[in-house]
Image 1 (cartoon, rainbow, N blue to C red):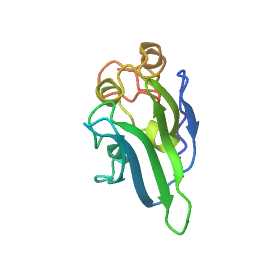
Image 2 (image 1 turned 90 degrees about the vertical axis):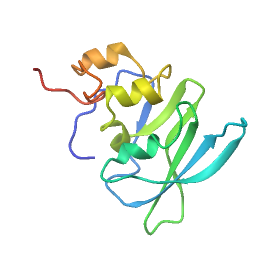
Image 3 (image 1 turned 30 degrees about the vertical axis):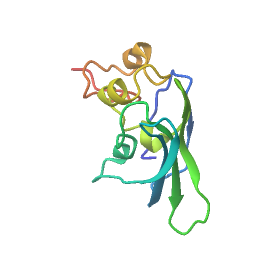
Image 4 (image 1 turned 180 degrees about the vertical axis):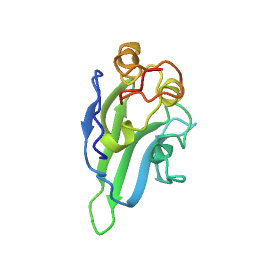
Length: 134
């Protein structure tokens, strides 16, 4: 994490598994037929949160990270239904209000109280990091 103070008023627990490391991601996703499948996940550019936005809303169930040089996959995002059980700090620190409103609406991450606490006024504002007053 980049010395950013997270403000988290939701029920989602944060984990700190990525810690600036590089590696591979894989996701457990609910497909159109309704069953779960495992797929490799890609990060696009420098936006680490893009790995959460590769699928349609409500499809992503679990995201795992395999750091370079390790043999064990680490869970960095987990959900069942509307409840987000955990999310990595490096993923949550860059999430915008728009990301949550589109991909995680109706989940425990989606909270107007949370947006108010960080001073978010637009969809482009960060959802879990204090935004600068205009």
